[in-house]
Image 1 (cartoon, helix red, strand yellow):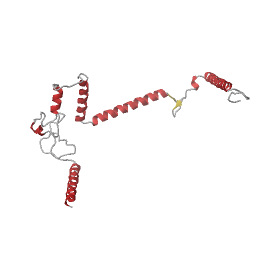
Image 2 (cartoon, one colour):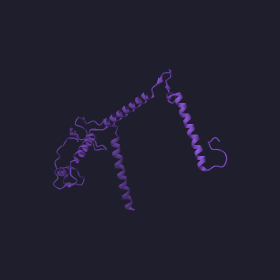
Image 3 (cartoon, one colour):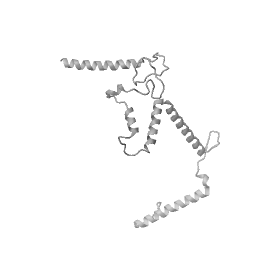
Image 4 (spheres, helix red, strand yellow):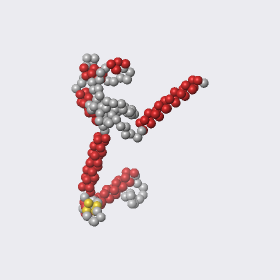
Length: 198
């Protein structure tokens, strides 16, 4: 039979042995044929439009190198897009993690570094914060001087730099944004008062 089993009544072991024998014979014949043709018959040859042989391994290496360069350019572009404040915050975080290796597990009340950090932290509900004198008055987080005059507010609370000439060159979106928030807040208050009148 084609599977290698003989016709007639047989046990399962006899059928399995005959099938295995047939498969082994087919593998042996395939290996002999491959040996006769040589290893070149198994390898696919790629050619370009002019008929020259293309080295696939070299093309893959070039593609991998190009992908790595693109990834590197993308990371550099992301770093360049970050501002000075984000870069400084990341550096401080790295420094803190590096210093944390040498710290003990517990920090006590007499830890000078912890006390200094807690003193410098701004708290929104601290009534005595107005009495404290800030060390870097008139300077940004990066240490650069700030503009000392009046400036229009913005959504992020960022003050202009000291070189700003006082001219708002925006398209008016910030002002409209604040007006819309105020209108919404006023309307909510009026609706509440109207409900209380009824």
